[in-house]
Length: 292
Image 1 (cartoon, rainbow, N blue to C red):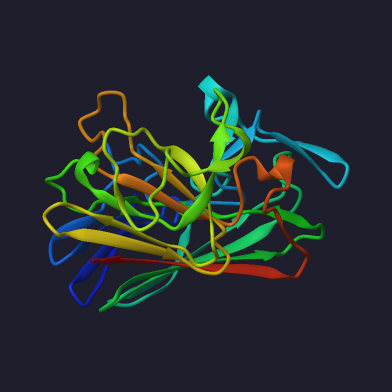
Image 2: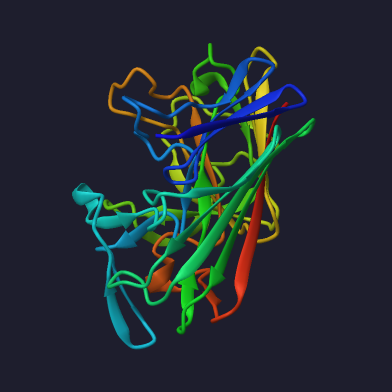
């Protein structure tokens, strides 16, 4: 698996060609994005690009423009197609410098997707942190249903459990889920997942999508005063938060998955936030990550 390192302003990041993903990120030697490579392979979608849909797609199927599509069900216990179709594609380096790298790949039309998309992802480090940009261009002949996110696991302080960390996220509602982790309806965050102004995570299990204002900013701060922040741009209307509960794995509840999304889970069926990219058009989204 080919890895590339970029650096600037005290920041260092690793990027892999497989999946075009962010492998890790550090600031002055301190890990702020968990390195997700077990045995040389990603284990928890860490740093992956989630497109052309983020989150879960019910039974891996949907109907678009009157035609039924079937994606591979990669989450068998809940019968869902999780996190899209590009996270396991091979990407090629387009440009690289000391603080910048861009990679490209093509998603071909298939029984899982109606048309072809060209993807370009870039990672740029500055003294303020990481600028992470994803562009999708419809190079096919049919319209493209679309949603996108990314999947970094943020670490405020590697010596602290996230139970002791303070999460700040401005949101009035979150999406309740059923026993398959698929959406039911919006509910108030009050008394459940209210992190407006900051609150300690404690022993709460979180795997929920929060309905946010455009361009959300998420902060995770440890008792030591160390922390990390992430922002989505105006395309980000949802943020999925997951407390990295890993069934006894040594890395459990040491990091927090933060996924600014353009749409809710199962958007190809519910159309909640679903985007349509017409032939010849493209969609661009930007994320930023830095140290507090």
